[in-house]
Every structure is written in C-alpha cells, then in structure tokens.
Image (cartoon, rainbow, N blue to C red; front, top):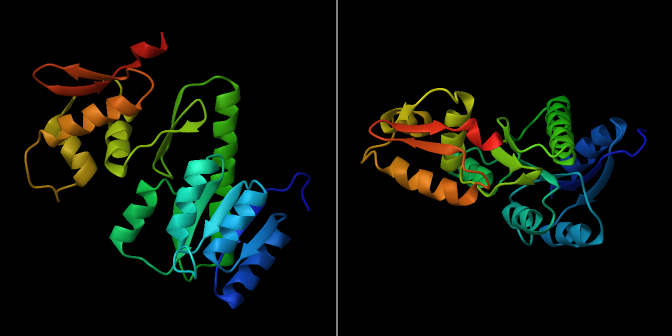
Length: 227
C-alpha cells in the first residue's frame, strides 16, 4: 500500500457493487471507508476527513445529493464523484451545479472508475500546489469548476462555461451571440441580454476583476489584474 494513501469515502447501498469496487480500490492502494446509507456517510464525514468521496445518489436515508451538499459546505477539500445509474441530463446538471467533480454512470468498469479517481486526485493535488504557491485563478475543465488560490468558486454550470470561454482566448472579444452558443449551443431561444445577467453574477463571485466589457461588441477576459 502507498505511504499516506488517499482516503476514500464510498457511499453505495448495493452490497455486491460496494464489495467489488471497494476491493479494487484497496488493491490500488487507497484507504476505503464504506457506507450503505446517507446518514452513515454523514457520520463518517464528521469523524474524519477524506480526499475523495464516491457517492451513489439513490441510497436510503439522506441521498447522495444531500451528502454532496454537506461536503461542499463543510469539507471543501474533499473531491466528489457521483456514481449512479441515473443518466438523464437534468440529474447530471444538478450534480455539477452542486460542484461535483465528476459524474460516472453505472454499470462502470472498475478500471475506468479507478482512472477517473486517479485523474480527480491528481488534479486536486495540483490545485493544492497552486494554493500553496500563491497562484490565482485556475480552471478545472474536466470537472467544470474554477478555483482561486485553491478555493472552489461557487459558480453555476452556465457561469463556469461563460468564464471558460473567455479564459481560453484572453485576446479575443466575444459577442453576446457567440457566448450564448458556447454555453447553450443552439438550444437557447430568447434575448441575448441573458449574457449580461450571467456576467453580472459572475463578477460578483470572482475575487479578481478579470472580465472586461468592450463597449459595442461584448466581453473579453482581462489579464491585466495579474499585473
């Protein structure tokens, strides 16, 4: 087993799935604490800190979303993967809006789950390194999350996608129509001023003034705040 092995909270009510995946995690060198109910998972969170939580949604007691909310409120350094049979878009969007780091649909290959866990933990370690080095704004494109000095910003999915679009091309000025396409694809029908509302909310949540208004055109990521 690894020295200082990562500690995993695994919430899963199906015994066979819990036993099989736990065994794979243990063989990969993780410390695993299992829970078959949401209330038991919450008790484990009160007792100790975890590097990563793998949460089924449909479990007895408080569901996986309630456990996710508690993690975001009190254990923000704990990364979260939602592992569930629910594959509808609405449920997935809800998970990401609650700041889950990943969403994996069952049935899943144990090897694929382990790779997803490895990716999340590697990214979490990099984010912690950024924080320790005093680095500023960091975007995690795999998890649809933004961090500032290691702290996760409370962005909705639409706000994150808007920030990501601007962040990727800081020298480009985007029109409102272009930003709508980047967030909603072609599914949005309505006034393009919805972008102004998203920008207003995003500016309130960002700790640095990095979104610039280009009068008569649209918006641009402004790197001048770094100077």
